[in-house]
Image (tube, rainbow, N blue to C red; front, side, top):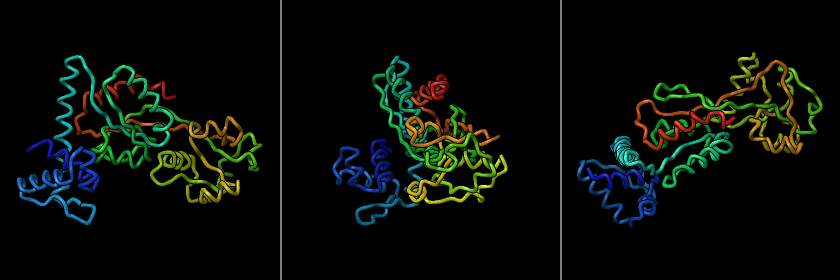
Length: 293
């Protein structure tokens, strides 16, 4: 089976379009169509349903995609292993970071890693914890750094960095001058909740429930309304609001008896082989755990 045709097939699958796949592969749309036609003829199955300007994979297309990604990953792994054997590290690595590590930790680590390897290209995908984890699970990303562990026996989570969550309020809020509040006071204020899938949200809710405060007791409000009214409070990563705290645009109020420390985790697929470049970056992350604190 021709690997180049599999590369084109995967692009059509991922981009849901022959024309977009053609642009990504530097091919004309008729050439892309010809590659897919050859595959369908060779396999005697229909791989895509044509839906106007977009296409949708058939069940056969979904099955082939999983195998095609593995074959292409093995091809890349073989090339990188041979280059590493020759004393050269090159190639591409696509990794994911949930919002906080993706914006505040990984960019500087990636920059320092690339200083040692001029011929590599690293693409960082930033999304919420759930999306990054699902992309690692589906094979779209080789690895990710996320803010919460998900329950899935196909995935491996390794603790990397620590993070501090803080209760943040507006300087005009009635708690702003307080030295601390009690946990049982938290439901008294409108509470700004991060979106579903956020690692900060998952970690925060777990910490609060372990301390005895059920999430249903919080008066959750829409973010826009709370900010406009300057009455909403939220528990956020200190990294995310460091500038606002420094310039007194927000205040940090301790919660008595509550430790708001959470962790960031390296997430990888247990059964997928790791490319030499991916393994080198994982080793680098583990060796530089303290750089993320």
